[in-house]
Every structure is written in structure tokens, then in C-alpha cells.
Length: 200
Image (cartoon, rainbow, N blue to C red; front, side, top):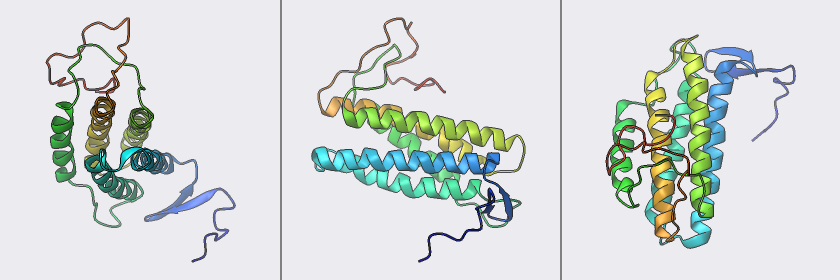
């Protein structure tokens, strides 16, 4: 396999259906998804190193999410319907079920928490914030060109998922979340619905 082609040496790159500058918002959008996927790989590696049995269910699920992030990035690279989209509503439905499942694995909170705790939870919080950035880039792209709207919904739900998974990871290692000291009560119910993280 040849890694370099020299075609991008002038600052442009190929997307699906066009050739654009490397700083084009479409490239920023799918590049941010790729970045999130890389941080997710780091989180998985931390779980494997710490205790592959304790975190086995998370490792399996996160490995599947890595596949889905490739689908999402690919969809963001498509210009003008050059191929069918891969991300569908079922992706979001599955994530919502996982959010509810892992939400029950950590103590309920009413206030914002500080990102951190164990190295695994900290890595998952980084995934959450990078996904939020990818979502912002995708929103900007959607305001300019046609994209798969399901990718926006998926990224929005995925950051919620990483929030609850980080808390569940802390709980598994008996590490308490640190509350934001100046936070008011922001979560409406014990299940923390509607504002799971600060992006909503």
C-alpha cells in the first residue's frame, strides 16, 4: 500500500464527489470526527491496560462506536449525494438505549461535574468534548451545504453517551465525581434527563 500520493502537496484534498482545500469546513467536520475516533482508541487502550474484564462491555461497545464514527466521517465527506449515507436513525436509537443503561451505573447528581476522575473517565470526557467540536463543525457545514442530518443527531447523542460512560467508569473504580462548586441544580430528575452534558 502506498501511503503518500503527493496530490495534496498544494493544500487541497479529495472528498467524495469533489476536490476541496484542506481547510474547507467539510474537511474540518470529518477531520474532527476522525480526531474523536483517535481519542476513543486511547480510551479503549486504557481500559484494556487497566482491566479488560472489568471494562469488557465498554470495550466491546466503544469498538463498535469506532466503526460508526468512520461511517459518520464518511457521510460528512460526501458531496452532492455521490453515494448513499451510512448513518441512520437506528444508530441514534441504539445510543439512547446505552445512555439509559449506563446512567443507572453511577450515583445521580443534580449539579455539573468537573471532567476527570480516573484516567479512563478523563479520556472519555476528552472524547465527549472533541465530539462536541465535531458537532459544531458539522452544524456549520450543514448551514452551507447538504449533509446527512442523522450525523448531527448521532454526534449530539454521542457526547451525552460519553458523559454518562465517564461517570460509570469512575463508579466502577470507586472514584467519586467532583461537583462544580458554583453550580446550581441543573439536572431535573434522578435520571439526569434533558441536559446530560453542557452541550444539550
